[in-house]
Every structure is written in structure tokens, then in C-alpha cells.
Image 1 (cartoon, rainbow, N blue to C red):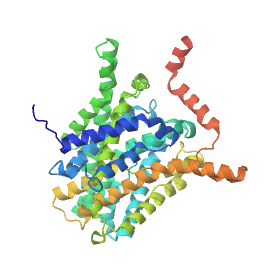
Image 2 (tube, rainbow, N blue to C red):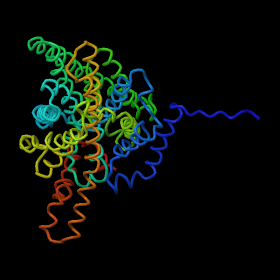
Image 3 (cartoon, helix red, strand yellow):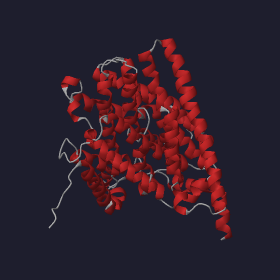
Image 4 (cartoon, rainbow, N blue to C red):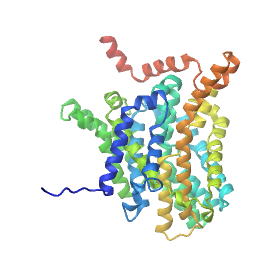
Length: 472
């Protein structure tokens, strides 16, 4: 009888772990998301910590490559690129132009405020030079579309979050992930050069080349792809499977091209997705098919399992100035101060944010996620490539950002269950209106604000669907 051989290497164990988690989580996905209102990314991160080197040591991504940080950046790059492409596609017709004022306030003063506040907290907690804190804080400035999906999609969002608010937060999370480069390179150039040289390099290398060229490439490629898909669909050259996966293949193309050219691939993918669905044709065609969302959900969960396994727990020690108490203080201050105060001050200049319920929701749910991991590795990469010694930025940026991402996954992942639990406890203890009011921050709002508005926006944005329905 032939000898039986078993393989127990990382190449065999990791697919079993990831596949097993995806299958089991899928079996009870409705319970997790629609009854417990838990985020799959939170469960994936916890699972990654359990099976990672910190606990069971069944998977150790640091052994997969001679450059683990580079592997982390590439994984986060593709997970983020696909997510922002889908975010751009799912926006209504010409949404960026129609909501330019709301997006302008969210992407300029509020994002700048999030960067400066996060940097100030990092300086206060870790006592680092403010310029170094600016580089670390820039990584946590963008909001994350992957984590935002947990509260912007599903039954809870449809029942309690107005469509206009969901759309503006999706648009913001897609756009500001690509716009993290100017904040990051502002600090890096000031570390590398004198002020005059730094400002010149920042203007022409970051804004003119990376940002502007990415917008031009994304707009052009998205437009050409839309025309080509319409032509192929009209003459029946493309099958349904290829048509539905076209956005993913377009993402891979753009990431490759932009990486070769050295431009902003994340922003380019968002712009291309928005250009692809500019007239709503592509969005309507794929709206109820679910293939893109399925692929994106699998990739996102896989990334957070990976992230849970690579959190550098050993770095959190007094010797590195990253004592656990400092990390806890950092997470608490950033979660409270990073976004909500700026939203409270500026919400009157954001037409899509109309009520105090909107302010509290939009101000609280600005999660830190995949983009922060991507920019943290980019910081280390840029400083190492140019042989720049910036204090202990290279050593501390990834542990600090990883702690913020884990804190955001945890805090935002349990926020909705805690609010609903508080509402239930309050209702049980007292039935009066005054006792119920504090627990109705997000769940209680005028029904007309959601449903009538959704109907109105759908009627305005998709007149062809109404005509077709009337004819039918």
C-alpha cells in the first residue's frame, strides 16, 4: 500500500482557514448582519488574531515574503481599489457634479481637520515632533469604504439611514481614499526637503502629476469602457458573466497602469467607476446581480483576516514608546475628536447632511481601515527609498496605524448593536417618550425623510425605469 503523505505548510493551512471562515460566516450571514448587526470585518479581524502568531500560530503572514510590508501594501492596494471602483459605480447619475458642494466640504475642510486633529493627538500621546506626527496622522485621515459598507448597506441602513446620506458617505469614502496622498506627501516632502523645495515638489509631483493625471486617466478609461460595453452589449458580443466582471478586470488594468506610471491608482479607480456609470446605464444593468459585491465581500473579509494576523502586538511596549495605555488613550481620543467635532461645526455647509441625526451618524461613522494600512506602508517605503531618517517614524507608523485600524474595526463594529441594546433597555425600563428619546439617535427620524426622499431621488435619477415600468 502506498504511503500517505500529508502537507501542513502555510500554503495548505491558509486556504482551509480562510475558506472555512467564509463558509461558516456565510451560513449565518443574515443573523450576523441583519439581526445582531455585527460587522463581518470585525469577526474576520478577531478570527485573524486567533489563528495568527499571537494566539494559535496557524498562519503567519510575515513568513510568506522576504518583505512582509510590501505584501501587506499590495494586498491592501487591490482590496481598496476594487472597493472604490464599486463605490464609484454605485453612485447615481452625475452624482459628483450634483453634490459638488457637499463633497467639497467633506474632502477639503473636514478631511484636513481629521488629518490635523489625528496628528495633534499622536503628538500629544507619543511626544513626537509635529512634522513626524503629520506623516503618521495622514495615514488615518481618509475614511474607509470597506468598513463603511457595514453601516451603509443592508436592512439597517435602508431602514434608518436616508438615501442621500448613504450616497454622500459612499462618495466621500471612495474619493478621500485616493486624496490621502497629498496629505501624506506634504509631510514627507517637508521631512526630506527645505520648505521651498518641498512646496514645489508637492504641487507638481503630487497635485499636478499624481492627482490630476489620475483623474484624467480614470475619466477617459471609464468613458471608453462604457462606450465599448454598450457597443458589445448592443451587438451581443459579450456574455453576461464577462459583462458583470468587467469592473473588476478594469480595476486590475488601472492599478497596473497607474502603478507603472507612478500615479494615484486608488483615486483613478474611483473616478473610472464614476465615469463608467455616469449616465446610470451600467449601474442599472448590474444593480441586482450581486457578482461584484460578492467578490468584493470575499476579498475584504480575507484582507481583515490577514490584517488580524499581522497586527504587530510585540511592538506595543514601553521600550518603543508604544505602551498599551498610550495606545488606548490614542484610540479613544481619535475616535471622539477626529471627525465628529468638525462635522458639528460645518454640517450647515453640507446640503446632504440636514438634521442632527445626520450629523451624529456621519460624524461618528468615519472608519479607519484598509486605506490607513496602505498609506502606513507607503510612508515607510518612501522614507526608506530615499534614505531619510525621520526619528522613529519608520518604526512606529505601522504599529500606531494598526492600532487605530483595530480600534476603528472594534468601535464601529459594535456601535450599532450597542445603540440598539441601549434603546431596548431604555424602552424596557420606562415607556415614556422622555425616557426613550436618548436612545433614538439614529433609529428615530421622520419616515418621510427616508422613504419619500428615496422615491423622489429614484424618480429623478432613473426616468427611463419609470417609463419602462409604466409601459409594462
